Image (cartoon, rainbow, N blue to C red; front, side, top):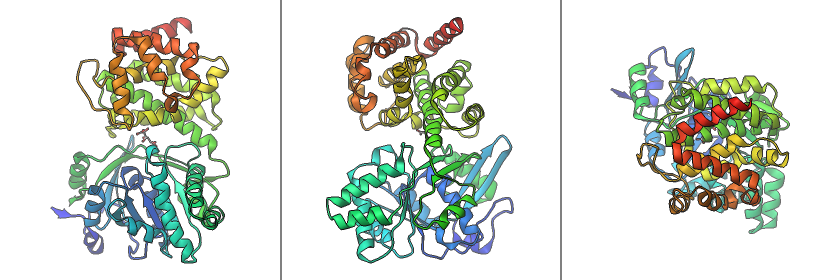
Length: 472
Ligand code: CS2
């Protein structure tokens, strides 16, 4: 079978059902993306593909993988091209995305990243480096490039974090300015004054690419694409109107990006509704032995739980307009049978996700004396999840920077619900300082952990639901 490459584009030999990029892929990249992975390729890269299609040649991407070489190198062999399968209730579509012009690996070629940040054609940096990467190493990498750019007398960049953090742009700005200030006040001031770090909310469910995507792409297109991946039709990108070049706002808006003054209502709704539910679903599914999110929401009790969590616990604190429709759309997205979104993928790094996804709701509601029961149940399931074996006794791996430590704590207190709760809530980076000492919270987590241990997650959940029905 023919391998996907630029030659396929030049010769226009792909089947007519496949939407092909029809712009020259020869201009120097205007965007440097850090964190080349499935999400970027199914989200920002598609928006940039649209901009390139519109004739604006400034949005080609240099895709930088932070450490792992496989995707970057395989993609480079295909001239950056890949097939995206878009699956929704209306059927499946295929798109060949052409915006990634080149790739490299930051850990292997750090000087290339520095040079790209300082390249005259570069206008934007986008980032999907995950929650755990917002630290000194990332700041050092960006600041090295920005220092070179400043030294070359070039203008500043728009640097858009696209990670699921609250206030992602402001966080990144602070990180860079602090790191620069340790080197030079002038540089720190230049970054603050000349670069723009818009906050943004990004959304599209993009499971890790699998061999199935490659096989599906081959069947559909007749081309061998080792980088094929799949996603849903839904996508959102809401970005703060804060760019080095103000005209970029209109360009992005023309592609369907929402350019707004304040991202907060969108970001809060997305993190707490979608990601908060995702984390709860993933932990329940992992312990119940349900492989994918769609398998989980096909379970009537889990579906009921997620709807209850969103409607009665999370939504009252949110400002985004149209929340009931947003919730219903989310439930339909979770049920998408084509996505095969693995619960263990979402459960990874939970120790970093919980504080962003559950804690704001929890803290606000506890302060108001409001019901937090579903979150107590979810927290108990997280503690049970840390034992690294499901309710049928099948082991699984926990992928989390704090995983080993947390797993050791969970195992040490195995069978002792109050002991487990006391030890695992005593983790201020996950739960904050106050919760471990709040009996309204600790007693409810303890109650549900005891139920989960005695009955298994599925039966404990059924009991939760029955108890709620009798209260309601
Ligand atoms: C998921 C997200 O893996 C996870 O933690 O919750 O990747 C989620 O699919 C995206 O944020 C959807 O936009």
